[in-house]
Image (tube, rainbow, N blue to C red; front, side):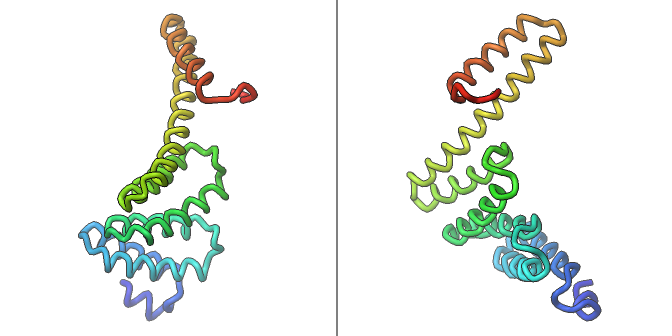
Length: 176
């Protein structure tokens, strides 16, 4: 399939890049990190030639390569790719997006493996703050649902939890 695509479409086609990416995934499942990196980098090179740098496919490639290098124990390279992905994510979705917490967790994990504990703690605190915001959102929703069900004791319980979290986490000017 890849040979046919290469002969018919050339070495710089998106379909070829996707095939490289699929091969990378297969090698990754088998623990073949070097081959996974080889094919991931081939696909990334094509994606960078075909897409703008802020494309989600390019960004996902950065994240995948960060993960592979982390598993391989090459932490500096993993951090480089994770930070590229984080930069993309923050530019595209903003720092308030609750989905960014895993990215901070990954960076904290890699810095911890490197023995850079202060940097790991910095990223884990950012992660913790985002998780706390998620918890605030969910307790608020639970309070409202229990209220709608006319289970007022439960609604009050979660309303108080929401207020406690809000007072601890958010400043007095927050619109929540």
